[in-house]
Length: 128
Image (cartoon, rainbow, N blue to C red):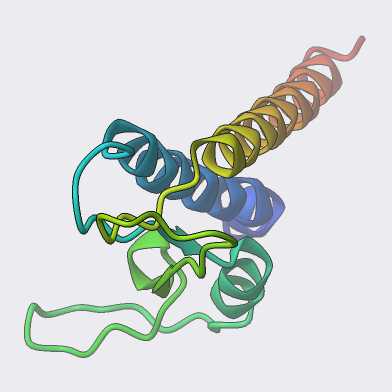
């Protein structure tokens, strides 16, 4: 089933990274009024490229080093604010909301593409 893994790897990787990014952005929004909270984000494009180019190595023991390829390996960075608040909080609610909505839209689009690919495969297997 290696060909099926290759067929779905891009979508699975994108969904995993988008899901992690939604969690981070949601945390930023939830902490918009928390003093000294630092807004965080991931660079989706860089994380996606890194995950897709990680090769076929697999971790077979808990002592082995991860080689990337998952959302957990995406580097989380602090966001540089356009206008920091006086209490040290770097969350800019309007920026976070736009980023969250954009990321959610991309997540839904990836799900739609994946659903279409699966439906096409079902039709092919049924001979339709």
